Length: 601
Image 1 (cartoon, rainbow, N blue to C red):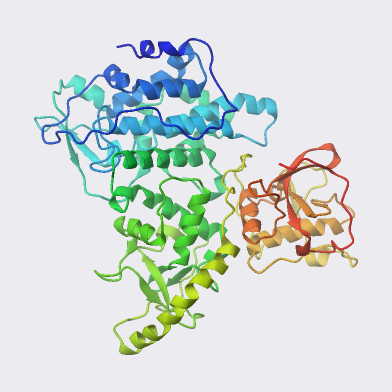
Image 2: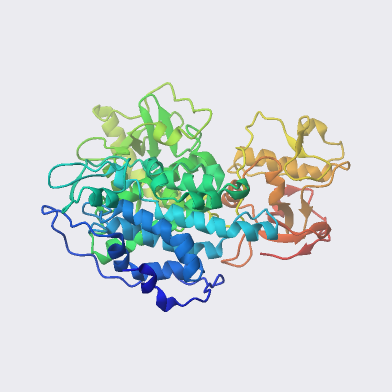
């Protein structure tokens, strides 16, 4: 049956509501089947028949895409048909989410739909001109749809072995499953699931040429934009924290929503870590992000959440896991573990956390500065988290795990655990206020470009060039020696502020003392307005700076629920930035507000 006939009720008029921000609604669909005859195999089906079963979600995709029937048939349908021919009737998992025949296609279509729908509230290429954004936005939306559609493509290459009744095995790297079944006239498909192991998402890239039409790839790569690079990074799971990959963020939110709803509709046991094993990669990625951006996660630093010794890498329990869940909640993911214990079970089931013995997962460690042993989780290898750090951190020249076989250590732990239990609530409450992530830090409207890592403590300060062009900087001598004797403004940074961010912010503040250069920030009655461009010009990720300043409680925020980003118009040019509270800037006493227009966002 021609799929366009099933979409005829949509009409030919262009239907697109870009301003709608409704709560995610899932297309009406039948509940998952209770089971299927795995032993008897699965019956292959044609592409038209499979798409006919999914006409409800295809109709939603057409509406979200915003084109008429001809545009949808020309631009979107070839991609969808290629993907359907590749995965055919494969289930997504053996006994978890979307485990029914055709489940992998349904998972991919729903993920692509919700990711595409979420692009209506995003501004891609936020630093480009309005005319450039108007040309790039349809391509960014199309790239987001492709990334959502292929987010779980790797399961067809890594998780299953498909064969016919004679034992002939399908080669997923060479041919689509639908084409293979038609070529060999396969009557029944038999699926054999491999052993559970850590997923390899990059395998999707090998099958992508069989799914993505060449004209679609040419459309995305026009004008040499970064769309394809971000799309492929989201599909393969190789996303760097500094990239601020909006496509990956939208696809992650969409996929967790879809999987969470399917597990709920299938009445899967919510407390079983096996049913939520897919969350392990999000927990691991959150750890990687925290060690790069959070001062409290610097390995082996005082009161750090991460400790690296000769005997391995340890995560302080339960405060470290609480930081992870807070970050993921800020990212807006669905179906997250309800407690650190649930998260520990998921990581243990995935083999990321090593148990202490057959009865307990929590270890006891004693770092050099700790007055008493700490509870911690041991990770399978330091590289699973610390590989993103350059240079790599140096391990302590000692074993930090406590050997609980000695009676003396047992007595020490017996005496200290009551004190730890009493101090845990107050400690967790105090630290959560200082290190809690801003709830909207990952949902910023402006999509920031790829920025080099922040300079280390030994790097030379940098100041913007006098021509005012963004991104062009020049090195200057040490900021302390280059300041005039009549210095007025300086930064009073709290201890918990990331040292790299503090160094750059100090250079921005001291630009007010330079008479030969235009200032990089502007005094206000409420504090000091620092444009995001000031961080970008100094090769610092503005999102990272915003999060670090919010973690240190240095920002002036408006009423509850409002953005921390404000918009000001110095010299008639609107700039996005943040306002640092007056108590953190020496020299603000008695200083009036610089006459710049305000348009708080």
